[in-house]
Image 1 (cartoon, rainbow, N blue to C red):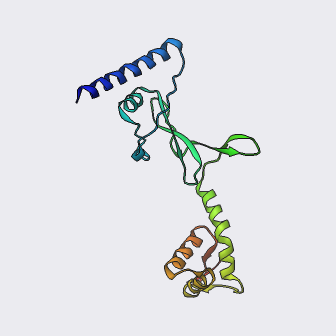
Image 2 (image 1 turned 180 degrees about the vertical axis):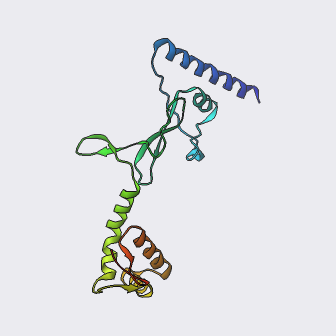
Length: 179
């Protein structure tokens, strides 16, 4: 390690020790905001000696990231006493009527399925329009390809999706019908 790097590391340790001393002396939290490394999105790795030392000595390391819907969430995987997992993290977004950030419910399997049912429901209805009773797989696939204008592999995936979210179901024979 070069002399410059050694001095930087010693200064980092001294700063973190000073912050810990201030927190104890004044019985208050010290809040430090650090950016993560650009490649540290999944790992949560903070920058440099300071980030590493703060991470080791802190009571809680809170992270802010976006969930699958793009909603910011706060979570903490490295805490001394109580971690907040990504799944249980606090989600928030700006509310124009409220004029402030408000908390948002976490996305659940049920809410994902309901959103998928709403977006896929119209296409499913169009595919089954004018057809009564059960429909063989090959006819269903062909109708999806025609009505939705997609290729065969996409039509096959669509059938699996519609089954999984409950838009269609297997009939008494090897056919399908609307649920």
